[in-house]
Length: 119
Image (tube, rainbow, N blue to C red):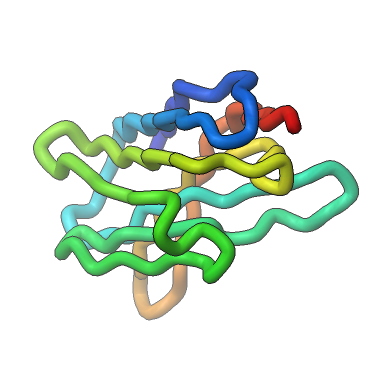
């Protein structure tokens, strides 16, 4: 069982910055991918950024150059530094940890943290 606890959401004006954190605990495989997903009202939950345990990163095009994902493997924590925020970045941000078990993905999710960007 894996527990993910997010923090750092809030209300910010367009052009501002926020930093999200997600701490993982429990039965964590050393090889994993951690990421952040965003869900706006009425929309599906979409990937924003991910980072492997080896440090490889992946970003959705809309956040490239504005968001930076990083992780501290010793602390089992992933961060999302968000800059130049836009109103369309508004949504609930969910932390995700994915491992491969017997060839199949196993996902764990945090409870979500609200990010609201006002224009």
